[in-house]
Amino acid sequence: MNSSLRALIVEDLEFWQDILCEGLTDAGYWVRVASSYVEALEALAQNEFDLVVIDPVLDDTNRRNRDGLRVLQYILDDRSGLCVIVVTSSDPVRIGHEVRQMSPDVPVLKKDEWDDDRFLAVVRDLLAGKER
Image (cartoon, rainbow, N blue to C red):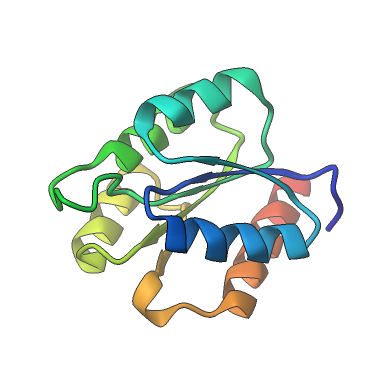
């Protein structure tokens, strides 16, 4: 991967922002972080991205929050060619089901089973599929 690839991380928790940023920057990505629905839409309006990594719950105090899924829906409606990965620790079975209903092609990774190498392999596979 090289620095011409651009990624947006949509994540409210700084700890996870750091983990995701480090993995992607080490892989050669230019990375921007958005911690809310509004910031994510602003970033998408201002920049072109190859990849968006989304936490579906963007309010750690409200587990019913689905602002990240709203970002995903916006991408599916308006940026259908964009590669997306959902990363969650909030009820991953339910979130996975909601994401599959929105788009069966969006991978869902569980934070409690996190593996940097697996994450980067999913990123590579997604982008390779986009190039075909």
